[in-house]
Length: 329
Image (cartoon, rainbow, N blue to C red; front, side, top):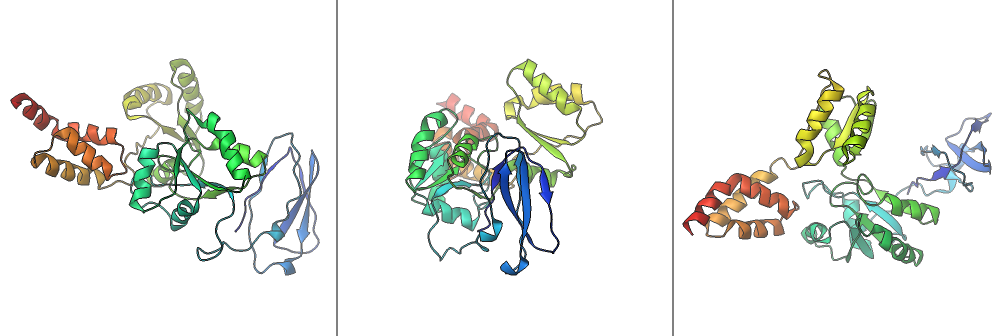
């Protein structure tokens, strides 16, 4: 497994070498300097690359020697997963948008932390995964952190998932990952779906440089301040906007960004045919005598889409039919 090590230090890099090589070994010497030395290429089976992250921090770091890292990811037939926090990307719409590795981790974990256990339960049920679920969301993450850290210290495998996409990206997970890194507990990202990356790749906008803004502040003053900063940037800006706030967002950004900026709105990114399928299921149930609310309940039980969203869809498509039945009744 190629491990990613995050090193904290205000750093200056100095590299010296008289012979070619494929690896750099990095040794922390003082809070302000880093010595970079070259490991002999004869110690490697083949060339590898590794990522070095530099950030400002007052904490010193220990020696990191990439030549000692395993050269390949263990197969699913090999030993079980090591203890640690696994950040698992899950589908952003279509249940097929999940990796084989993600499924293996979810099956192997001692516990799965989930934003909404009912929502994530549908995903686990779809893939016959029996791992226990534990709620972990913005309202209880502070209370859960210490008990989760204890489980990790005791050697458990903990998987963290969000309702959709990659944990920590405008979803719970960032603080827990930070605590684990500080406690020297392994944090293992399991790559998978990410809504903004998926949308950006198909948007037709520039991907050379972009800024992920995420959700804007709720209050008008701070929101306008953030949008004013974004309006001055030439790079692609990425925002997360709740459906009921879309009109407000377009009005505010139009006034600040001007008419020359292109805008792409992405929704239902991987669910090209899901709404049509849900409509058919709802229509069939209602034609067989089920009420709109019952039809929504039945369809929601077998879908990754939230019940509230399905109910909204049902009202949009069959609201008049529902009102007619109610009036007759």
